[in-house]
Amino acid sequence: MCYVVFYCNRTCCVDQRASHDDSDVIPFKIELIYLTGLLEVLLGVGLLIPAVRTYAAWILIVFFILILPSNIYAAIKHIDYEKATFDGSGVAYLWFRVPLQFLFIVWVYVSSIKEA
Image (cartoon, rainbow, N blue to C red; front, side):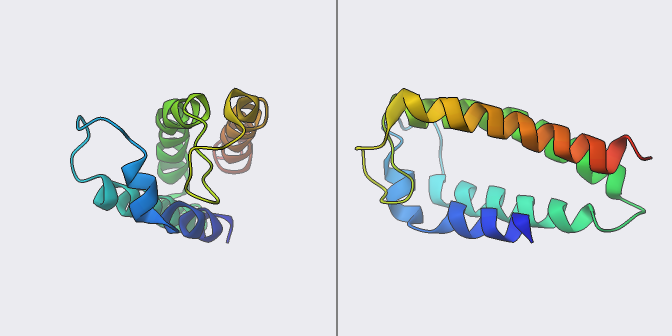
């Protein structure tokens, strides 16, 4: 259920979110936002299936590590994800987001890999 909420959060205002990246280095920004959101949901479902739980958990951990730089970038650029504007809390957001990201990693590890 948590990953469905993440998907909804990631895909709301997708056009504005994609426009926040001021570089053209990343092609297909909108599609990438939807794809990563869908990936989160599918991996979340994978955590519920015993046969693929460990694989889904490791992929989610790697995903959380890979997505962290984009959260740091968004904080440095003062991106407000709720309003899709550039007046977010900035670097102060990292005091919340980075520990939360590590909490997700530990949570997935303890609940899905350590048990296996």
